Every structure is written in structure tokens, then in C-alpha cells.
Image 1 (cartoon, protein in one colour):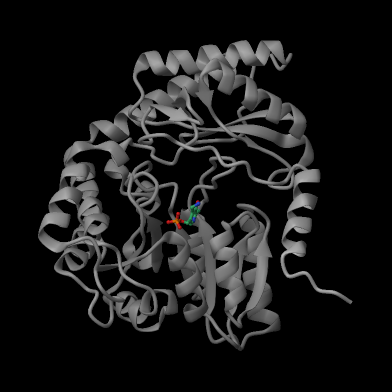
Image 2: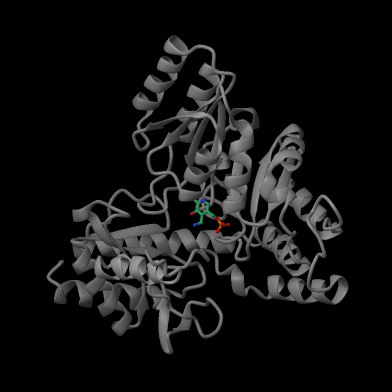
Length: 398
Ligand code: PMP
């Protein structure tokens, strides 16, 4: 047998291409702004996670530039050796205050947070119970742990209660039980019933971990996130996880909770211990993002105003927008091929929104996933609605 080490790479990708499951990368020629250049064409950005437009906020940009002047471009090390700068510490203190938590810890990314922390929280002799639609970084974190795994039906609290009862009656010797859920689910824009998850956790002595990547900067008092949205006591949710890569407009993961959580997490998470820390510009821009959220509530207010207007207009036009309760609005079109055609037509009309197709969603529930952005003007939202109406009529969706 001859082995060509490069051949399988091409063959496997060719299979993806044949099944239309490969990614075609779109290239932004400039910033992620409301009107941006994608593959050389000027379009309205309608699918970024930059919910509040902070990736282009002058205060964040200035903070990053100033940090380069004062601290250089790299941190020089991993955090535990020589890579903890005063800016990292300041960011963690500011974030904890913003969240109303005892302490916070910043990781390099949200993915590094979930994949680094979850396998430390649970191991052999433990049980982790996870929502069926949790993000891939949670799935990978759970896989890396040696804990037993159960999956409950998406947001189904009877199913979660059943699994907790089973764990108590049939296998009462678990050392620890961890319940883990996304806060806002990124495909449908629905919100996890965290109040009920937290109540079940307290009843069964289980730890509750929420990934609030899409809830921060969006839900709760001034965008403080899902724990604030449900007015939950800090003792009810042991790990509130999030990312600076979405509404905060920069990059980096984080957790908030007790001082013990912070100490535990940084002593044990391999992704945190063994990977270089954020450049100073990133830490400084994140501090500025927290500052903007604290002092400029208008961004979150605009996000919701645009969201309400867009959802109402789309429903009035006759589109199926699913169960979304957040600025993620799926426009469900049915078959995958239709979603692809719709996305292409929208792009021609000047709106950039990607199709989400099988196997990411059910075969007959392919959709255009739209994500609202506070930086859009009222006219921009009108423009987007007009493009959806035109493309929707052409494709006989409405
Ligand atoms: N959790 C969820 C729910 C997410 O949507 C994402 C980003 N797609 C992540 C975690 C990972 O965050 P990051 O981009 O900071 O790695």
C-alpha cells in the first residue's frame, strides 16, 4: 500500500464539497462595521456577533493603541510565569464588579475556557448533565473530562429533573454533578430557563455552569447577562462563563463566580496555564468595553429597539422567525438549497447574512440566521427589511 500523506486531506475535503458541507470563507476588507466590504462588495453586516458595534468604538480603539505604547504588543509569557500584566488584573477586577461577582478570570478565548475548565470541574466518579443543543466548546470540554455524561432534551426541565432523580436513585455515589447550559442558544436565539435550572441544581446539590456568550451585552441590567436577566443570587449559578469576542467586540473568554472558583480555575485549567496570555492591547480594549457598557446604556437599548422592530416587520411580512427571544432572529425558509439561494440573493441585494443548513439544524428548518447590531441606523434596518421582502417574494417564501 502506498501512503500519500497529502492525498487524504484533499479527498476528505472533496467529500465535504460534494455534500455542500464545506466552508467558503468570506473576506472582510476593513472593519466589521454596519456597512462593510465583503469579498470586495459593500454590504450591510447582518450576521456578526458584534452586537453593540463595540469592535469599532473609538474608546476601545484608543485604549488598545495606548496599551501598545505603554506595554508593547505581546505579554511575553503564559499567565502563571511572566505573562500576568497589571492590565490583565485590572480587567478581571473590572469584570467582576460589572458582573456583581466576587471574582473573575480571563482566558484566551471562550473555547479555551470551556475546554480547559469543564474537564477540571468534573472527572471520574462525577456526572455532567448537558443541554442537547449546547455549543461545541462545551461538548469538547465534556468529552475531555472522564465524567459520565447525560444529555437532556433542549431546554426541557422535566427531562433534566428526570436525569437528576435517576442520578440520585440509581447511582447515588457521584462525587459531583455538574449541570451545564448555553444561556442563549445561537441557532434559534432562545433563552435557557436558567431560573429553573438553578432551582433544580440547588435541590439536587449540583453545580450550575452557564455559557453566556450570546447573553452578555444583550440580556439583563445594562447587558450584565443572563444571571442578571433572571435576578438570580450569585450562589445559584456557580460558573457564569462568557466571551469578549461577541458583544464586547474584542476577543477572550472569562468566568465569574466565587473567589474559590477563580483560584481553582487558574490553578487547574490547562488551556489557561499552558498558553500565552492576551496582548496588552486586547486586555486594554476589553477594559474599555466594560467601561462603555457601564457608562453608555444606549447601545443595549438600541440593540433591543432594532431587534423588536425587525422581528415585528418580518412576522408582519409572513416570515417564520421561530422561537427567538433575542437579537438572534432565524428566518426559517425550509430546505437547505432554498436557504443558500436566499443568502446569495440577499448578498446581491446588499445584505450579508449566512444560511444555517442541515446538519446544523433539521433538514426542513434551514434558515438565514440574522444577528442585530446596535450600530445600525434606522435606515439600515429599513434597508435590511426591504431586502428580505424582495428576496422572500422572489423565492415565494412570503
Ligand atoms: N460558547 C458559545 C455559546 C459560543 O457561541 C462561542 C463562539 N461561537 C463560544 C463559546 C466560543 O467563544 P470564543 O469565540 O471566545 O472562543
